[in-house]
Amino acid sequence: MTSPLHELLAADRFAVTAEISPPKGSDCGEFLEKARALRGTVDAINVTDNQGANMRISPLAPAALLVREGIEPILQLTCRDRNRLALQSELLAAAAFGVTNVLALTGDYITFGDHAAAKPVFDLDAVQLLQAITTLNAGRDLAGTALHGVPRFYPGAAAAPEAEPFELTLAKLRKKAAAGARFFQTQALFSPEKLIRFGEAVRPLGVKVIAGVILIKSAGMARYMNARIPGLTVPQELVAELDDAPRPLETGTAIARRLVATLRPHCDGIHIMAMGKEELIPEILADLHRGD
Amino acid sequence: MIVSKQKPFSEILASLENISRVFLIGCAKCATVCKSGGEEQVWRMQEDLIAAGKEVTGSMVIDEACHMLRVQRDLRAKGEMVTAAEALIVLSCGAGVQSVSAGSDRATIAALDTLFLGNIRRFGQFEQRCSLCGECRLNETAGICPVTACPKGILNGPCGGMSEGKCEVSPDAECAWYQIFVRLRDRDGRPLSPETTPPKDFSKLVKPGSLTLER
Image (cartoon, rainbow over all chains, first blue to last red; front, top):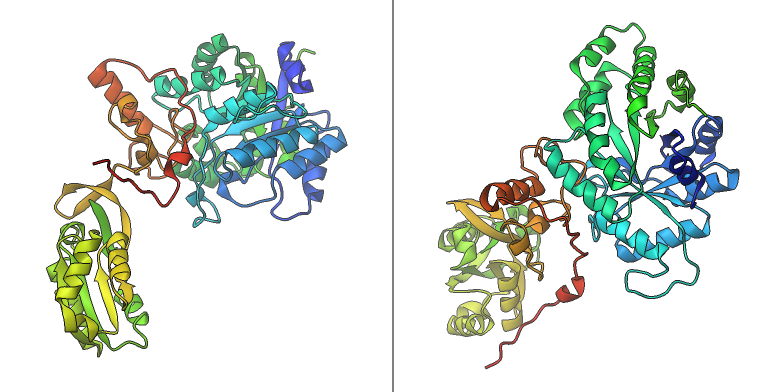
């Protein structure tokens, strides 16, 4: 097994992951505090990569710091900001730091972020990045040259189970699986129906499904996500529930907690996106009986 | 055709700070079609420059400003009008500007910004369909170019931002891979290829490009 997360999923045990954004700046203190507080609650922590195309510290540094703390990271790596040389060398650096789980992403488009004038790279796409990871795992780089020191990555990819047309989404997911993805972490889900359809389609590909649950902090945030975040739709009844809530954050937490319970039977793991409110993750997971 | 548009006049004026006599050059091909450097725009530029206190020694619209020898010949034919000018203002794409800058010892000022290789949708409406990427994959993508139609130019299907067939970057636009998916289905009756397209070979595109035909 390449990593404890790999071991867990391979043994058909339920996995819990959560994401934390690295800081804008070099001080990882707060990031590490949040991560430490989740020790024992989650199995691995996704370290996002210039999320939303907003410049932050490279996820490699906080991921390496997590390894040092004995906390398992999932390094997110996008194709937006690096060409194939930079992607491979970042991966080798990750391996040198003991980072094994990698989530290969294409990346949000550059104009969404805080450096809208920057040159978008996209030298590789997520499928080709997964192929690159598989190639490195086999001891070669993309030019075919043998590596001195071979990494053992556990590659994953993102999936948007609610994106329509599903047949088109699925064509891409099949390529991701064929290119080496061993687990999918999904975009935030709000009902089990799409997850069930998704699971049925990707399970034959030998890929584990970690279902995304997002903490919606207010009705405003729900509306913003519906308007601005592609592949994600907060159902109207949840928006209304948040609208009527005297304390929206509590209601949002309760909704996330409910979703965890609803999605639980249809996936191999849950991925919590707490949007800066990571201290609420234990509460969101309170009803999760992991059966181990 | 090459789509271009005029720089703001204030920017053009700013590059003429210490120059009072200018000669104007337009292009009869692309810049005429996209109304950035045809007869009409050259004439208007002349009016605006005179109003701004500049002296215009003359003007011409070259048949193809990208044709280097023709530009040299046409500049020579204009003789004194050109030599009397301190600077040549060129209303053509960047290729044309450089034909002029290479073919004259006068300062050359580009009056246009060059945007893209464009298709003409209808009069005055241009769309980029080809990125001149040097490695055409249209035979595999139902004649729709994902390198161009997708802002990310990705080669293996839609990104996670595709929603209801729309693009995350311009929600009014259709996702390139959705267009390909639909056309393959409806026209050819086949699904997207399950084969992974390898990364592009950018070594085929080392700049500056050149091509010499064998005789």
